Length: 246
Image (cartoon, rainbow, N blue to C red):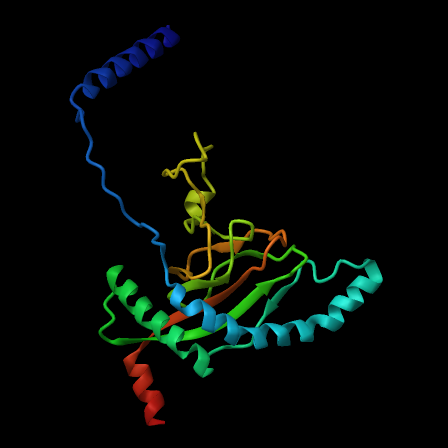
């Protein structure tokens, strides 16, 4: 008897839900929030001069890592420079990179404003600027990471092609990533997409918010791969005034 009553109530509830559904909107309005922007464009006019200016930094990095590479190859077998990333010291302050530094800072200011941020009480500074080159023998890569204490990050590619590594971005929304469903078609960019990559070439520039997780896929060493990486920060003018007074 109790089971019959329960089934009767369940049927009544199902009928009620079905009846209510008829009153739902036949068309729903789509609104999108919490978007993650990535901008890219080509500025090849800087490539020649910046490659020339970068050479000494890359050579210095190779010289600094030579002992460690030789030690590894002697112990495990000769693989040349495989797996290494040659990383320069800071390029900030080098006159040869001043033009690109100013270009990056001005563009970052405009993009943060485009995103909707009020920068009237802030100054944008390029806080980090360095050049990297992946190993000639291949294996160079970056693991997934973000950039702390920054607001805009990006790359400027000096040596790159469809045979080299490329940047790959991942969904920064941890709550979404931990609850993802399988994608219908990974060849299409949809709401289900959790990774996007960008093909690169010399002169291509990419800007993105520093919170975006990114990595570089393993380079196979077919062709040279070199790029400048940068980070920008919006610093309150009040803080700058205090520092200047000191």
